[in-house]
Amino acid sequence: MNANDELRMKKLLQQALPPVESNPEPGCDLWPSVLRRLDARAAAPPWFDWALVAGLIAFAAFFPASIPVFLYYL
Amino acid sequence: MNSHPYLRAFLSGIFVPTLILPIFLAVFIVVRLWLQIPVPIERGLVFPMALVPALWGLWNMLWLGSHPGTHLSVGLHGALLPLLLLPAGTVAARCLGILALGSHGVTWFQGVYVPYALIAPCFLAALAGYYLVWKYIVGFLNRVLGIA
Image (cartoon, rainbow over the protein chains, first blue to last red):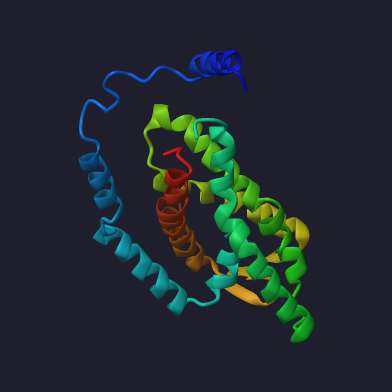
């Protein structure tokens, strides 16, 4: 590769890659929002949902004949 | 991750039924072929295997399309699906001969008797089950696939 090719390659690379901004960092700190999202996902289900789960289990235990019908409708 | 949102909604919608149906099939094979129990389960599999997964996928696509206007949560949207599945499944069951209407109740699969008084609680339980599954499983998949 001679000097001419190197110059040409350099020019092509500069054309292909976008210029890096003077300040590439985001405007604000993103880590707190990541932590908030992780905390939101780890939140426990509300009592109402636990009550529904308990009700469903009790219903299936008291009326087992309903289970194949549930499975049919899925 | 911003392309084909409806395809991703369909895939996350069909996840639960397509995961459970092979288990159905395994139970069917054991009950029908191994234990030789004369229950017409193969006719009962037509509705859940042919229609239900596609309906779940389409229902999730409908949620994605209607959510900006309705602001309905995915759990409540999923809880509405039995309103469509109950009549469709009942009509299919009647046509396939696996549901017989009696004077005091209905007989499923020529062996499972459900009194009429139990149908309303069954329906409410189905609504609750659908609400939970859609809220926690389909909602989780929608978040993972970047559409919620």
